Amino acid sequence: MHLVEIPERNIKRYIPADLSECDKNQYINMCGLIYKYQSQQLSWDEFQTHAIYYLLNMQPSKGTELTDETKFANIHQLAKLVDAYFEEVEGKKKIKQYYIHNPIERIGNGLRSFYGPNEAFNNVSFGEYVDGLNHFADYAETGEVKYLYYLMATFYRRPKFLLFIRKFGYSYNGDTRRQYNPENLERIADKLKQYPIGVVYGFYLLFASYQKYLTTASFWIEGKEINLSILFQNGPGEKTKKSDIPSIGMRSMLYTMAESGIFGSLEKVRATVNDEILVRMYDIRKRDLDNQAKEKT
Image (cartoon, rainbow, N blue to C red; front, top):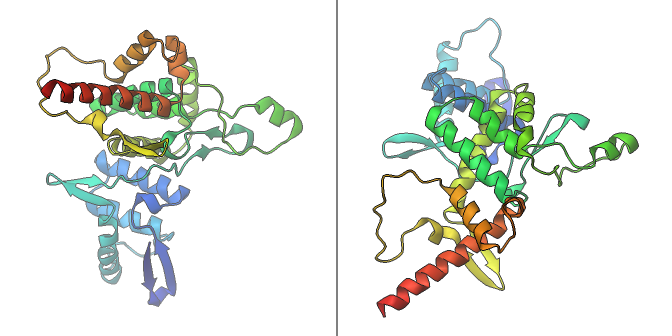
């Protein structure tokens, strides 16, 4: 957190250092601005100015312009704080994405709420993840907004026991969502359109951050730490050249797991918790690397 003081207005506030420190409203507002900036609806200067006002929870004074000399100087100085939300990668500004908690785990109110993944996506099925990854890639490839809604609709659902809640008025903490059903995708996506773009783009950024996290993620099993980085790296002496035939990506692993029968049928594999599949993938990969090492001895 950064402490910001504006003595002439008697303002003393803390603002988040990056997206990982934002509360729900700050996160949604900032992601909405980032979307507008990246889609060229806002210039960099406009983005910085709006971001500072959002983060300080302030509104421009009526009857004054943002180009007022004193105000412009203050905004220009504070804009350096917004720079910290980005890092430079290969000469380009990239959003800092080092968080796996879900700032918008719940959207909507009361019985109309939708619940999404919890921290580190550890309540997500493999089927959800594979389908979501497909929509994530489609948006990255095409930039079509519909894929943002499809991505979020894959993971956000009503809670279980909703009829029970309606009848008896019990509160619900959102830990359990209804079972994932791809047939509901269009319907949920359509309902998500009532929310600001910062909601769906915010989830896209969270999913991107989770993808980044997976390349270094660790699990503790029987007192031993396993690191998933081996899933994304070539082993010693492995060839990196591939054919020109397109890969079907993670969907290939889904079919492989179903063929092995270790988790059951294709539908049972899809319903298996994603973390369990990742651990199994680690086990398969480690065996491959062990066999490669043996062949060299």
